[in-house]
Length: 119
Image (tube, rainbow, N blue to C red; front, side, top):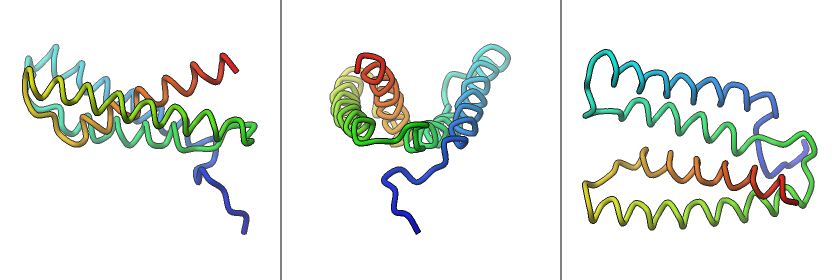
């Protein structure tokens, strides 16, 4: 058995993208058709699961450079999401854990692909 740092197969990214788009379509449907802005908790749960699948799956070329970029973006994303959550909590309301996780993974995944293109 080969030990790998990122456990998911690269094809799992498609499942993650599907889950993320499903969650986004649920938010759009609930906002436009039902005019309900209160509870998006199930959408954030599904979106965070999709983002976990996207970020923690292997890349096509999975080498040490990709691992370094992933960990750098993970550090940046979690810290930035933490400080943004502090600001949102101070100004508006207390976000749920799934909202924080979704924000952190969204920032992390975005930063990973930006750093990957620059490298």
